[in-house]
Image 1 (tube, one colour):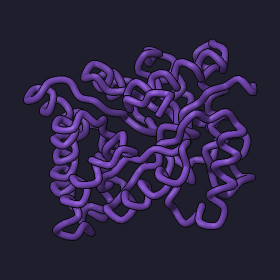
Image 2 (cartoon, rainbow, N blue to C red):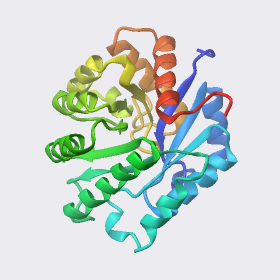
Image 3 (cartoon, helix red, strand yellow):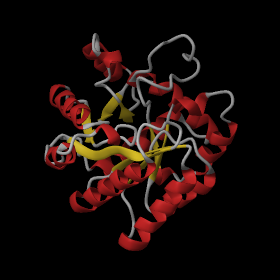
Image 4 (cartoon, rainbow, N blue to C red):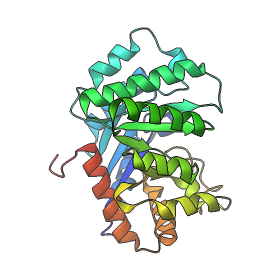
Length: 266
């Protein structure tokens, strides 16, 4: 498997879980065959940390944004900071943003406002948007359809996808990519695996959402997920789609590089 080339399209490397051994985490990712990692901001401060990591490690790229669960805590000038940070050459995406009805940290109308801000900034910059959705699929579909009717096709990712085919199909039609994380490997995820089987390979991505969502067979054995563990999700996805892991790795990496507009010489 040494010839694999994989891109982890979603990790949170600035989390405290990585504070003590981030260099070793990156080294293990390189040894596992990763060609890139997108570390994703959830606040202005987190976004700045993501950029510092991307400046430090050539393997790492940054996404900057304000997560729906952090939007209520945002200072008045935090969005202006995000608009400034997008100019950094290591920033290749916006987010994560989106909608969340599982937690109630941020009023829903504020979540929607911030989501629309990210989408508008995406249109201005050409950067793709990393979209979070938890227990808000109907709301997400409605907002995305409204944005499409007003502004046309979208650029972005339905990240760590765990939803229905109805939501996936709409996202695909509107121009979005679908990314699968460790939950794809879970015993109770048969319906999600059915969705993963149907996504066109041209819009398919893979991620860890580190340090969360440890994949099987490491789930219950490891307290923390990390980019190197993406291999387990890759093998599950390859089995679901009846393809070879090497071919799937090449496809999803090419998709990520195209979406993020990264050339291998960068």
